[in-house]
Image (tube, rainbow, N blue to C red; front, side, top):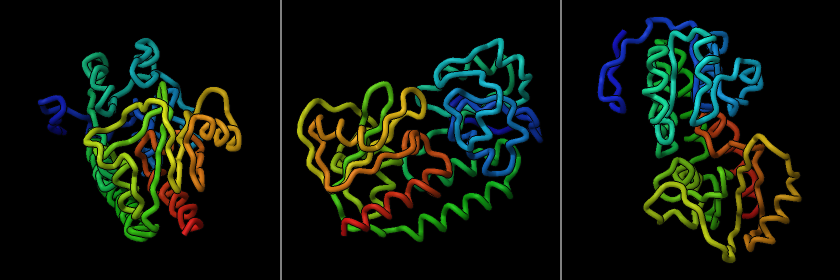
Amino acid sequence: MRVFSEVMGEAVELPDKPKRIVSLSPSITETLFEMGLGDRVAGVTVYCHRPPEAMLKPRVAAYTGVLVDRLRGVNPDLILTTTGVQRGLINEVKAIAPTYPIPIPVTIYGVLDFVKKVALVVNELDRGEELAIELLRTLTEYAKACPPLRTYVEIEFEEPYTAGAHTYVDSMLRLLGLRNIYGDEPRAYFSLGRGTIEVDLAIYDPKPIGRKRGSEEVVNWLKARGIKARAYLITEGDELAHHGPYLIRVTLRKIAEICNKLH
């Protein structure tokens, strides 16, 4: 089947029923497994740790670079990427197998569209529809579920970043009824200088790899940096940095639960 890619500016010839899919995005990997297509995933990145079964798949890439020999070795019939910093990978990998980039959503509602687009390119529309409807129900259930608490978000990339207005993270907080203290910034993710931040809720999203720190250790580290909050939520890692179904199904619920304890 031929599917037009606005990112690539061309139609891409895709297999009708891909059987050996390589996912270069944790969000895509998670979505494929959630649709019951884990048996068709032939390769993933080192950051694909959700669900746990994904870690058993051959690891053929990091997030911005691929191991070409490993990628060829899994014999993919379809390669899926996202956009953003992964745009540079597209030309490199499309010479190996048909490649399709799924754009990164900028709102929490865009996560549903993201799911549907993954379903479209793997030709599993019914499975994608079922998953999107389930996630839509959760969004509806938790709309304005929280009081308007001042909220600070910090995501650990190569260095800590916070989220501005042009992100699905800010959109999720607004859906819940929370006030992102940087929600008026007309940009996506950006690093902050030193300074005291006083909020009701601070959410910290660490990397899932590397040295694991306990929640108490992370909270003390945040306080030492001047980030003061009535409550702190330390995620399991990569819950906000990626936009798979887990973000809505689990992380959104966690935030709602802790913010209502502050009401």
